[in-house]
Image: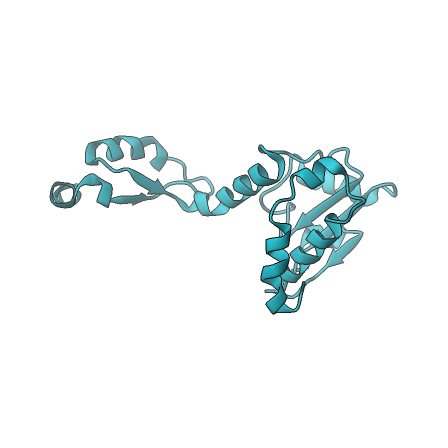
Amino acid sequence: MAQLGHVRDTHGGQRIFYYGGGGQGNHLPGAYARALSAALGIRYRSNARAQEKTGEFGSAEQMFGNWAYGDFESCEVALFIGKNPWRSHGIRRARVTLKAIAKDANRTLLIIDPKHTETAELADMHLAIKPARDAWLALELRRRLHRPCIHPPLRTRCHGGSECTHAARPLGAA
């Protein structure tokens, strides 16, 4: 604490970046991070969980205007891109729900992931894209969703399509 106090006194608390806490089952540092931050004048902090979830929440905000949770218990089509809910970042009652989707002939489970996971094993269709090819996949999904027949409320949430297409031209994917 004395060394951090010296940094605070010499450079100001805003020069100290607190990185800690978060992650799976490691939430205890959150309890004392505020007290430490207040004592040292720390203004900036982050944790491993921020890397893991911030992109997901930010994407949801851009796509839906708020956090949205999929209704996997009653959906007709479940699509998982780059994740294995059987093991992590699960859905509610993941294993029971995934098995139910897989067994129901009127429902479809689609997986897009380079790895052959437990969830992919249950899937009706597993698209094992090559690593580092997800940009092409995203562009194709964008192209198909931007068709004139797409549902109008979804089209109002699609922004930057032309910039995306322009940026993809050098890749040969536009």
